[in-house]
Structure formats: C-alpha cells, structure tokens
Image 1: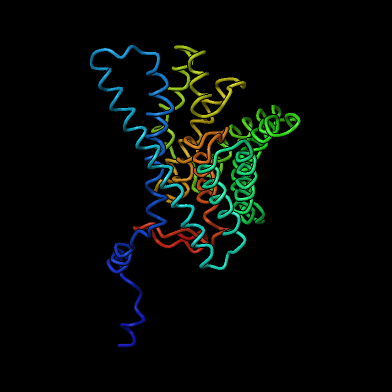
Image 2: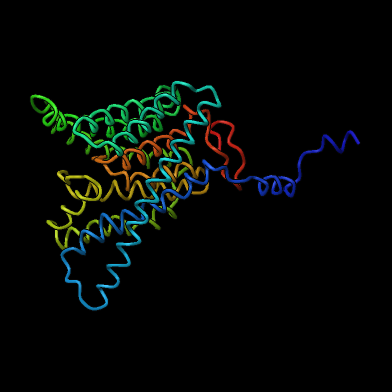
Length: 332
C-alpha cells in the first residue's frame, strides 16, 4: 500500500490531470480577445476604410454592409471583453495582496470609464497618465529582474514604445488644454516607432534563445512580410495611409525593416503557441492595439498584452492554460 501511494504518476494519470484543468473566467476572456480584436482590425480599421472609396454596387453592397456590421459588433465586443479582463486582473491582484498593481490597473479602468461617460478636453491627458502608470506597474517586476536579458529587453521595448506614444499624445493634448504643445512630441513618436520595430526583432531573438530556431513557424508566417512588400509595391501611398490608420505607424524607416519586424512578431507568436500560449496571445494583441494608442480600447489591449508578455509576474502568475503542465516559474 505504501509503495502504491509513493509510485510516480503514470502518463495516463498525468493526462487525466491535464484534462481536468478548466478555463477560469479571466483565462477565457484573455484567450478569446485576440480573435475578436483582430476581426475588428480587419473589418473596421481596414475593410471599412478601404470600402469607403469603392462604389457600393451589386454584390459588394451586401458584402460591405454585412462586413461592417460584423466589424462594429466585434469592436463593441472586444471593448467589453478587454474591460472585463482588466477588472478580472484587478480582482485577482486584490485577492493575492498585490494592492499597488490593483491600484495602478484599477485607476486606469476607472479613468477610462469616466472618459467614456463624460467626454471632455481634459479627459484624454489624464487617461494617458493613468495608462502610463498602469503599464509601468505591470512591467516593472519583470523588467527589473536580473536574469533573461533578452526577455527583459523585448518587454522593455514594448513598454518604451507605449510610453513614448503616450508622451507624444500628451504633448499634442497640451495644445488644446494649455498654452501650447509640449516639446519633443514628434521626436517621441518617431523614437517610439523605432522601438516597435526593434522590439519585434528582440521578441524573435527571445524565442530562439529560449527554444532554439525552428523552420516551421518561420515558414508558416512568410506570407506576412510578402503581403507588406506586395501592398507597398502595388500602391505605396495608399498602403502608407492604411498602415497609419490601422497600426499608427508612419513607415519613415526603410520598408524592409518593417517587413522583417512584422515577420519576426508573427514567427515568434507561432513559435510560442504551444510552449507558452499566453506569450503568443500577448503578441497577437499588439497589432490591434497599434502604436498611437488613440483610444482607451487600444490602451486596454496594450496593457493586457504587457501582462501576458511578462507572464503576469506583477500579478503572481497567469491562469492555467488547460492541457499544459503547470509552469512553476511563470504560472499558467
């Protein structure tokens, strides 16, 4: 009997333990959010804006109406899911005694709600400051650690881009609520865009350093840079405007750098899909969040992405992903 109790678990028992894992409400919200947000990105910020310039005749009229209706629904649903996920993070932080984190994220959620209900010229600057505080509180425990330099640099690049974007927006807001724009806004925007590109390559380097290079994810995501180059070759002016509208990037650097960075982001997301799925989810949230972060919805997506890319370290770990062994270092 004693020998039987101390015997190691069989593969069948381990598999049964995996199957018993269930989605938590927070985990389910985080897992479905990228699909909804990317649907919104494609149908609202891309298809809708391109379709404005196409005559609404014949079958296209029906397709355009259906796609824009679905896109509007996706936008509303993604906004609600993002807010619920942030509220879930606040509740989890409070339960785990992470009061500082709860205050930082909760302050941003409250500020976003007030800005949505009572729109005014002073709302945007306040929300930008609350967003910057929330991002810093989420990222700092991960960035300040002493190991895994590449991971820290990759997350630091994402956070630096977000903070530079926020300052650029704050500098512009100051022109409408104060005596004039703050200095350095344009430089912050250009520097932030460069950080977006650099972070893409750092994310890829992190994946390779952690798991080794694999051709599969690189090959599967090859259409991403091909699409970037193809669209630019077809019409550089229209592509530039569309990228500015959707991702908030000016494309002032050589095009091959952006194509390579997009490939790096996509390959890393595909590479992390099985081994660290929360990391992959975080990477998938970054394109719909964009760079300029002009709305509280986009800010919410970016904040959630940082939580996932830092493995929820400030939170004390992330929800368990069903079907995976528990990760003692990162949680989930």
